[in-house]
Amino acid sequence: MWGLRHWLQSAATALSNAYLLFPFTRNIYQGKLKSICVPGLNCYSCPAATGACPLGSLQTIFASIRPALKSGTVHAGFYILGMLGITGSLVGRMPCAWVCPFGFLQEMLHKIPSREIEIPRWMTYIKYVFLVFFVILLPLMVIDEFGYGITWFCKYVCPAGTLEAGIPMLILQPQLRELAGWLYVNKIIVLVLFLAIVVFIRRPFCRIVCPLGAIYSLFNKVSIFRMVHHPDKCVLCKECYMGCPMGVKFYEGANQPDCIRCLKCMQESCKYGAISYEVAGLPLIKKRAEEKLSL
Ligand code: SF4
Ligand code: SF4
Image: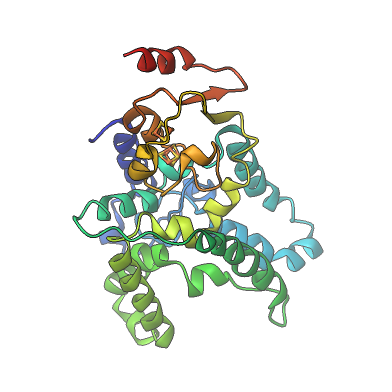
């Protein structure tokens, strides 16, 4: 069903990539909006991108922290950390479900009829390894003679970057093709593999790889918006798990790290009113959950 969430995902994708002059300028948008981070994963170097990617910005902070400390401009990094902290504190991992263009793409591709493959739970912890090593430690520790590191996750892993920036920029600027070597081929292979498995596995990038999702997930248990499970009403039918785009077993507990607060389990799957949400501890739709139960 194409509900409110899919409309918002579509709108967020369009707004994050609204620079439609790129076929004429043959370059990325570099106006003032580019200094603002969007809440979801959307490559900065996509020719149509109007905002910055929080993950790329975060790596840039760590990669340039030494020169920034020397020049006294390290405060610029507080903006992105503040944005992530405020968003996570308010809604946890909700941006992944409602406004992330790359999450939206995965959900659409997974609609292609196929055999469902489930991943073991331990794989969902790999994204924290990507966060610690590729986003923080490697950009921080591996530096050149001027003290600058590089954005490791963007350069070596991110399939969103390959899809949104790597391929379009090679089309727009043919002179770049000569520079594209093994690294580019490697990233194309990662992208193709990823596009193939997303048909069979629910949101594999979000669950296994995405460091941005890993950051937001740390806030799920403590954010102002929280999901609630009512064990007294739950009959363990597992419909919530069957319909969940992230493969979360909601009946094992609310606010698990991979819950992106899409509300599908509450609105579509659970027929027993065993799922609701609260804001700042106020059970705003408890009544609705109770009405469902009495049907
Ligand atoms: S769909 Fe509802 S009743 Fe069924 S297992 Fe999930 S929470 Fe429990
Ligand atoms: S557990 Fe429910 S709210 Fe969370 S991601 Fe799954 S379907 Fe969405």
